[in-house]
Image (cartoon, rainbow, N blue to C red; front, side, top):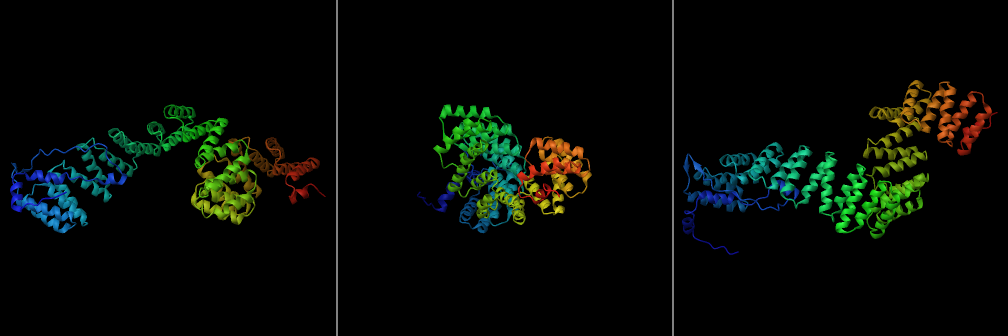
Amino acid sequence: MEIQLISMRSFLSIIELVNITTLMYLFKTHNIIILFTLLIGCQSSNPAKSISTDNPVADNGRIENQPNAEGLRHFMNGQMLMNQGDFPMAIIEFQQALDLDPNVGAIHTAIAECYWNIGKSELSNNHLEIAIEKDPNDVKALQLIADQFVLQKKYGEAEKYFEQLNKINPDDARYIIALAELQKIKKNYSAAMNLYLEAFSLEPNRYELLETAGRFAIQQNDYDQAKSIFKKLSQSLPDQERYLAVFIDLLSQSKSFDEGIKHIESINEIHGETLERRAQLGLLYYRSGLTDKAHELLESAIKGSPNNPNYYFSLFDIYMEKLEYKKAADLADKLITNYPEDWRGYYSRSLVFMNENNSKAIIDLLEPVSEIFKSSFSIQYLIGLSHSRLKQYDEAINYYEKSHLIEPNSSNLLHSMAILYDATEDWKKSDSIYVHLIGIDSLDAQALNNYAYSLVERDQNLDNALIMARKAIDLEPNNASYLDTIGWIYFKLNKTEKAKQFLKSSLEIVEDNSVVLEHLGDVLMKDKKLKEAINYYKRALAIDKDNPILIEKVSPE
């Protein structure tokens, strides 16, 4: 663009015809983007509304119609210096302009910008407040002071000015979004959600605003609102697969599987079928118990898009549920080969090994990648559990402790650690964990039973053990292990009839448990029923062939 220069005399003769307030308005309405808009990447799809400049500047009841040419010259010089980054000199020019035109708020705003850029935030705020006092509708001054308070983390002050901006321009979504973000900072997610919905109503093509509202709905557990939002998103943007996935997950939480199936079918009628929608349909069928339909859909989705790992995991679950372990193992092997950076493939393969009681194979698979997946609780925990099952307790506790750092409140981990400490006779630690588990959940039947069994094995506090065992039985009356525990406690309390009753009930549920068979043999032996006792010992030994105690018991002298 060519810029033609004119002499100062000619320039001044021109500006004498122009109201200085109007020229200052050109500065005031210079386009800026407020801080929150930058932070969340928002761009308004509505043009900004112009601000009226009809109000003249009053000075002691006198309307100022005549410009001060010298003041304007200083102001323009200040603008030039500010654009060059020479803020101290710009301030001097603006101050001289202010001396000549003290009632022009735009000069205060310009000075405020300069002070802010040289780190004088308090002076900047003072001048902005003066500018706003002179003109409460000064949009630029309001935006600047609001942004500055945000940067200073004075969110309450910032909110006050953004609310003022919103009143001036209620159709400008930027200010509503800024207010929403301030509500988020205050953890008022409901208000933030409603403000984002309001912003979306002003700019209905900006679906990221609706998505943000949906995320806030999920965060505050407003699942009905979240479902409504993500349903609309999945209908409006059918190619954005993540919206459908979130909607289906929300429906699955409320077990509204039929609604999800109908929703996908309606989208397919309009837009045609996609592999992602086919897979999501398979997930819904699987979660609703229609595994045969799910099986077919998921296998076809994987065949059509073998590079999407998300389809594999539900199909893996189906194979495990149908006891098709070979297919499950093959699928997990594919995941490991194709996605070695994804811990879920290793975890899935380990579940097959666990079903086969092959703890060594789990260790051989997972230990070489344990450092790669050091932040994965499931990987660290499975290694520890496998070592524990092999009675490699030192190695087990090492991985348990790593798991504990990742998820210190995991109930499964705490139970496993208590069992390990019990096995190593570190009862101070095991008792502490059991007390903790029961303290946070008095209905934790497993903790009640295991603590009771630990006490009876030590012949300690049998009365308390009986109380806990009874409570566990009340919670799970058909649990074979719990029936064994209470039967064993009654045996230690010399109540053999009750002991036999519970132990036999346990064997009716699980008939091949060597420990329960041995316990019943001990009860019968105490009742001097030698032949019956030896019969139960032999049944136990047939299961646990290398148990030296059982070998001795079946051959009494």
